[in-house]
Length: 145
Image (tube, rainbow, N blue to C red; front, side):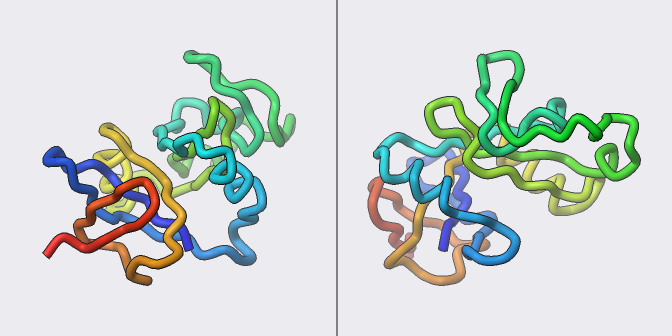
């Protein structure tokens, strides 16, 4: 399982979402990113909905490459109705999440991704991370009492 954590300002992290490997998320690329030992950091990529896709490279202003679909257009209703959030490792998108725009979840993700947000592999911590506060030492999640 993977946990999305956002730094809450006092050197602890709040769990906002969890991702289980399976049909919705191919985690092969994510696992490979964690094996590098580099951090996997979050970014609100809603301004780059059609190009912020898995495998794309971020150059500081835009994304290029990756699993782009030339048929996608910002004018498409389906694309306009989502916000896109990505996780980068070494400036490459390893995971992309779409959230319904103008929803409570989008509001929460917007707030979280405006600060420091990371993706961590949670192998020994609690199974349900949402709404809990943690210490993260780079290896293990522990709940803050």
